[in-house]
Figure 1: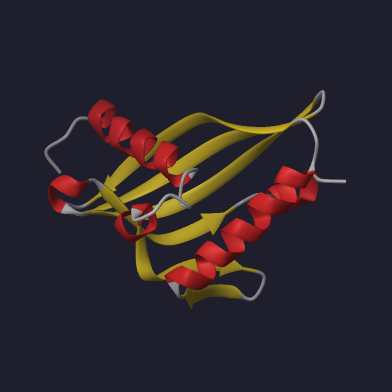
Figure 2 (figure 1 turned 45 degrees about the horizontal axis):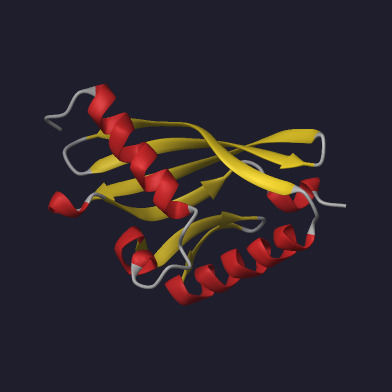
Length: 133
């Protein structure tokens, strides 16, 4: 890949910021492969994009029910894996009232020409639902 680590990290940070807005029309089509590989309790499974979006929406609704909750991106970094693939780590901070918890996910991203990066695998290390009452 002909980018420096700094510019790759900038691309990954841009992807991460967009990832929080998946519900916006057309954004998921650009950011997510279909199907998307998702790491879950039973291992990594191909999940249709619409099913993934439904799960993300349900999780967002559950978090939204909590008063005084906020999720903030605190870090994003990527490591090039050849010319087209990037392994990225996304770090978030989840605040609920006065309590904060780190959230971390790894994503396998594919470079999509000039359109940026598209997620082909989502590998969460933590789950925001574990931090809700």
